[in-house]
Image (cartoon, rainbow, N blue to C red; front, top):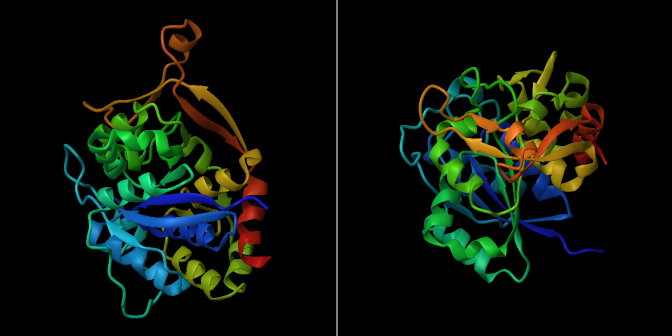
Length: 305
């Protein structure tokens, strides 16, 4: 049996973040070493508390490190209308007992990455602020990273405005730094995540599977990323599905640039023509399709096996 794959989550929980984190922690093929938090879905104090709530609820000894509360060059625009005021509305967690590490998340990530005997995979499901600062301050970590798997961007259409996806929009300058870093990156954007849906019959099976399933079902009932009746969009869980079952997805190497200024700021632009003509190199492994049925079946099986 292969050793579990070491991963660090950089996250802004968030209800779909919670789904990704719970699945990853419970799966023996993954070794979750750190939850690094960032402000995005809600303020960083709340995302940090939510990460701690999840580790406490699951009774796992995984450290949580608080990261950046603001983007590099703009003001944070959280979305409590999607995830609730706490970021994880819908379930009554017990009073929080745990605390985050004293050190900033960027410092903790550097120490963990450099100390690891194996290359570490970064699962980035919030804004890219922490990772951009990590790469700027400590570029030596890049050679110790196996890849970055990120939920963000898209090939057509946004969910913040007509072109930009939320995670990229909230810190496009950080995303640009990360996308231009030279580290292998797989991008799961809206063109894929909007097709990877969870419907009520599947969610009700998860609800009956045990405490973790019931907790997530309660969150899903309050999540405004679609609805269980028409299909809930669990964006961030796609990153874990890709790590465990890349065969669910079709991918293509593309040239992706992040627009950082103007009305299109936060847009991930794929220049097909420039790649065809040899003017630009393909730099990002982009997921272009997902088998939605296999994704939903897998999601349920992670709780009901």
